[in-house]
Image (cartoon, rainbow, N blue to C red; front, side, top):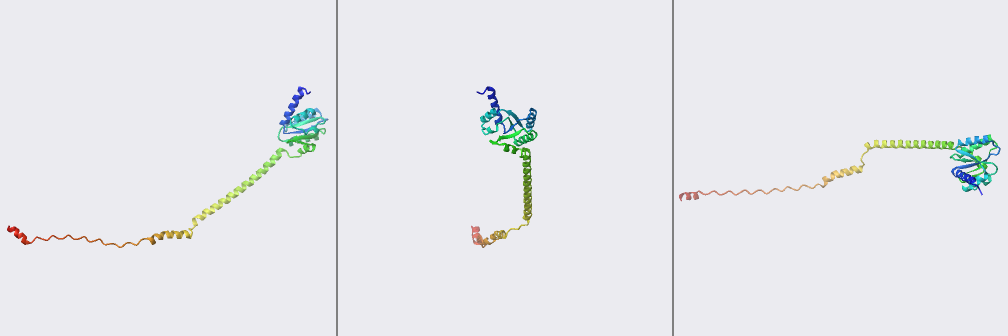
Length: 227
């Protein structure tokens, strides 16, 4: 039955495995303490840590973390590089450089993106371009595409402005179509054609002259005087 110390160590390893973006497994047989210390220091520069672990504890922690494809890789003295950052390639390059400097160091495999890597696959990571280089290339491509898009936009804008200026220059010299002129003439002449002829004037009736009162006769005057 495992003691409390081993149980605690397995729990710590499980937490490290689950928090890492990748694992790179090595065999360190023949490395001195100074060489291992130097390797650990170089891995810290790329956000990774190296742990010398008993195979039984590491396998138990890996199984608890849901990884069951690493059993064949834990044979002999093993050291695991936990890749905590995003640049797995940089860590692989550090291990490859260390294996050239310390021939006793052997890369046995790894685990990343839910899949196990054999020795060839783990070493092939070191031959890829680093994250910084890839990001730089992507940035260069985007910059080139943006420059091309900007040039196309400026060209289209210039062409549109030229067409607009040509259209504005054409507007003052345009004449109305004949159909419009004909319609205007019809509208002007129509009132003259449809104007009603004036009615003949009717002479107003002459006012009747008042009849003159007949003068009294002298006979009537004379008879009055006699009376």
